[in-house]
Image 1 (cartoon, rainbow, N blue to C red):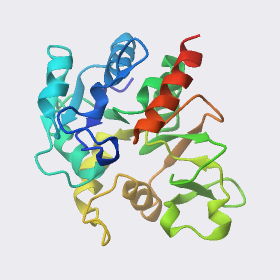
Image 2 (image 1 turned 60 degrees about the horizontal axis):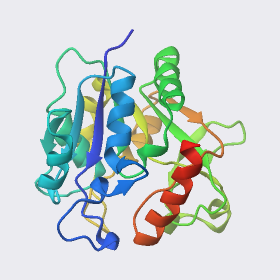
Image 3 (image 1 turned 180 degrees about the horizontal axis):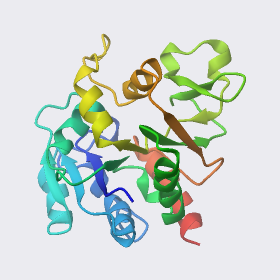
Image 4 (image 1 turned 180 degrees about the vertical axis):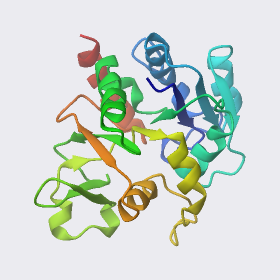
Length: 246
């Protein structure tokens, strides 16, 4: 049985939320701060340690999670892969794999979904495994591209997608399990985006496929889920969360 740690990404500025003084992950969702749903769920699954990568308005996150997690700071926000690199420095030597998820949408993952991702990763001896979900409106989200046999070919962001690919409703919500050895081998080889100057975690899926590393997916179909980037999306998430809790 592999020893698993978790890294929660909570450093982003979340510009579209228009929040100047607090990070969006500490906004209330349902009965508590958004990020606490994920932290409490991981603790319930006995995943330890839990490392939270902080950056923008870090004090607001650290105050909410004081004593519950280990913090890693991403001083310069250079993308999700760079954030994981910052978090990886706090992972103990005896950990074999790491669960990576976002602080702003992971409240919707049930214990069963997280357990299924970890079990699939371990049972398949994959280098990396990730959740996929099906949504009615995939606009703005990374599409999961498969060949005719269902094998994963990669993740295509909307701006790079063909008309046909934009019709794909299976998306990547950015919840992964990585072997530590795989991360150490490929993380610092990721090239930064020519458009944003950031390093993206999805590039690791491309690297794995290119280098014949085993990639496993865990399709969850249509689940209650909402990425939260705007006040309007927060309102929708609040509505969905009431359904989720019931």
